[in-house]
Length: 80
Image 1 (cartoon, helix red, strand yellow):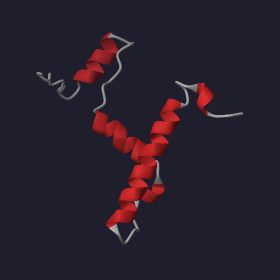
Image 2 (cartoon, rainbow, N blue to C red):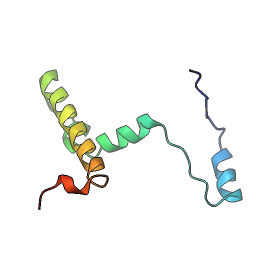
Image 3 (tube, rainbow, N blue to C red):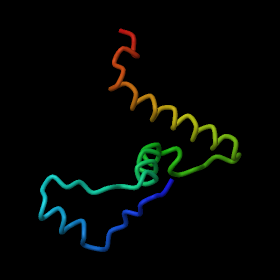
């Protein structure tokens, strides 16, 4: 499978936005993931002494992110 690089030069996205108001800038998947993870302050500034504890917190944060993204798709997941 071939990957297509979609790296734009500086100012190219701004020009595209000016010509097409419906244009949306693309974000890398990693940028989106880091943005979601940075919402958890406990992970942003790590005070954990053991790597295992930090790894558990990362896994728990990922589970919360997945849960929050599933709720709009499957509204019946939450009882009540």
